[in-house]
Image (cartoon, rainbow, N blue to C red; front, side, top):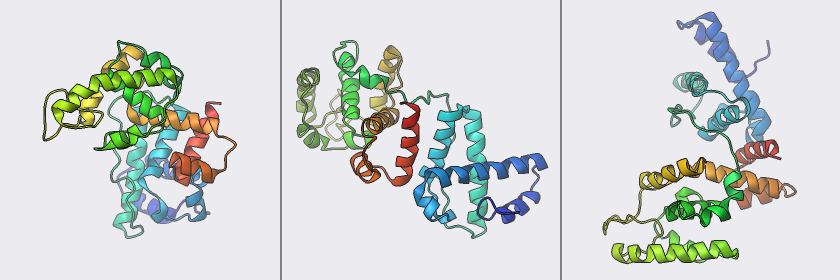
Amino acid sequence: MTSQYPFQLQYEMYLKTTELATSTQITYSQTIVNFFNFLTEFNPGFAQDPSVNNIFDRDVSNYLANLQEQQSITNGSYNKLLSQLNHYFNFLFSHYLSTQLPTLNLHGQTKQVNISHSTKWLTMLSEILQDHQIHVYTKMVLLLSSKGYTIQEFMQPGFYQEFNRLSVTDPIEQAFIQGFNSFIKPIQQRQNSRDLFLKQRVNLSQPLLSNAGLHKYLSKDEQYLALDLSPKKLHQSYLLQQLIKLNDQPDSVLMEQLKLDPSSLAYYKHLSQQNL
């Protein structure tokens, strides 16, 4: 029988030494087959160099996210598949067949999340920026996300320098920024900081709002808007919108503009086709 994934024979022999039922062993092996089929189709880098040492945590994450999107798998199925992949990669690592352990930093789903990559909030942005029921921090997150910035970027100290260079021509966005500046200036003075996301209680040693602190504002407005406002999902929506808009551009241009590696670009291009 032709091997369908690296070290299949060794892994299946190892499965037979475990207490897993035969049907479960078959399921484990099929999960690995499906994973490598996905890599071969959607990861050009792996397709050119199909080595177990050329697999990283983002590849496993992309595979599971794709199943959430395409097959609407439950959190239980997500966790089960991650466990099976982890079993395989642990086998390879412990038997010196691989130097990589791509599942090491991945965690199971602990709550039901909306995995839709909806771009609805982008079409609603002007309306949201004018809604006085929504906190200015939430609005700023949405505005920055619509410009392609990630939470890792706009929560960094000194990001205000990048923000001050941002060219905004939309009148509604300009009006919001003026209102935001009026809101944040007194806080910046109290905190002796020019950053955008600051704690409202004075804390001169640590004036920047934490990610958890920002989430409190987002989660409240998330209920009001009935939209998933997690920064990760917002950035994914931005990427999908841009890929649809720039679908005539070569991959090299897309990777540079959207800051994506070949594997991630292939994954998001696949998702964007579902949104056309």
